[in-house]
Image 1 (cartoon, rainbow, N blue to C red):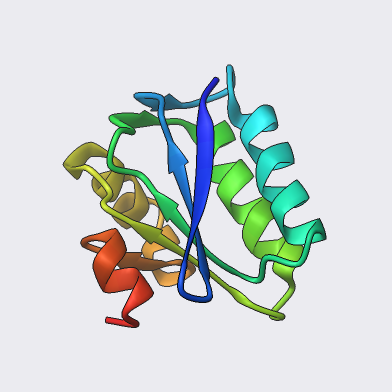
Image 2 (image 1 turned 90 degrees about the horizontal axis):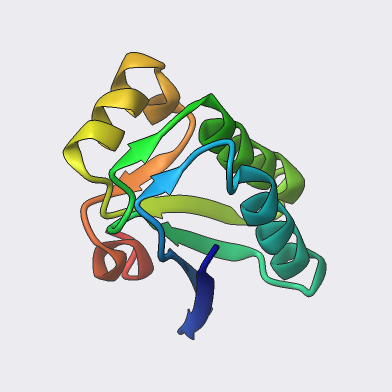
Length: 110
């Protein structure tokens, strides 16, 4: 399970270096994001560029991260691949999350 983060301005970009965000890594991902938030990171961008598949566990981990901030920050998604973007559209999660076409767009507020 590989997750990395870097700061870009006041944003923390979390890169998922796996092709699947599913039950096998969702809990570890959630813990990783919670640790960032607990350490004061409140403007988070999740880079989904490598993720080709996401299941309900992956969606749940993203929702948990958003809820952990409880309105005291931003939690957005970037670079969703077509199958992942379709999942957000089908589940109406595109109304809950800010979806950006790229990390650059997300950190520039586009």
